[in-house]
Image 1 (cartoon, rainbow, N blue to C red):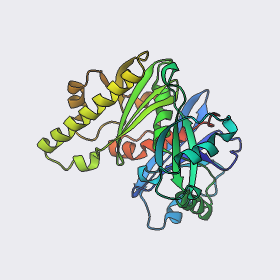
Image 2 (image 1 turned 90 degrees about the vertical axis):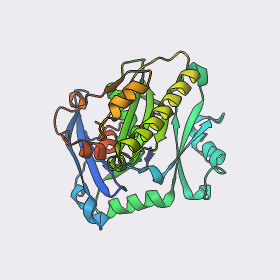
Image 3 (image 1 turned 30 degrees about the vertical axis):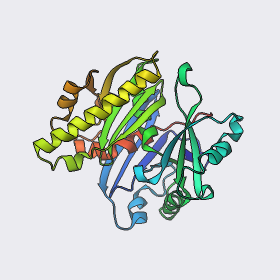
Image 4 (image 1 turned 90 degrees about the horizontal axis):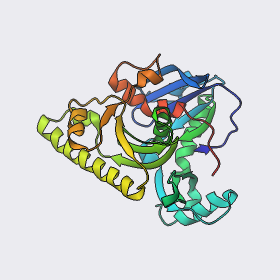
Length: 303
């Protein structure tokens, strides 16, 4: 996503998920085309953020930050009919009336959606206020962190989905983290669809069984509507199943969704992807979920 610095050749990558009261990170390298996870840790963020980030400082390993949900916007748009080198400028002009601050105060990037022949030319404009990005750039400088990119959760989850996909098949991946629920649909490593779901597993754990059932009902309905929308928009695509990851921290959620959805729901086997250093604790894994996906980041493709 937002990249300002040319990444020097390095086999490792570290991603930080911040802004949720927790400081979560994952570091990995690639060996023979497979990710080798070196660490995956979450802890309470120190009041002095630069001090917290200091543990990542002084290392040549490139670092990326995954923004929290409230720190950016995703705006679906039709691709402007301009050459690739003019795309971002054209998108800035197109979305200027859709944001609540002057477009000159925004940093804009673009994701081209994998949409097939039936709905080509669809883009997602990724918009963040300059002060949000400046905050992380200054924090990295104070902590001597080799910051090279700033990412978003939707692309972090896409990176994990790419490891779970079957070539040329469509994968729906559903996650629940302290930020809520996120459904992504991907094909051949590219994002096709995304939807935020209002379901905080930490808060839901504190509810009684009756309240949980109400939330489960609403969640199942939102998922079903999303799946129906995808099949209407892309009649040539076939969704065989939904994968759920990281492991749900709310008892009964997976079983309830299995009963309500017409597609099979499977728990993703993350230990097959990351045989070592994966947290055993479901809460820690959920907190590190987007950091884990961010650490899988490869160089962005050109539009």
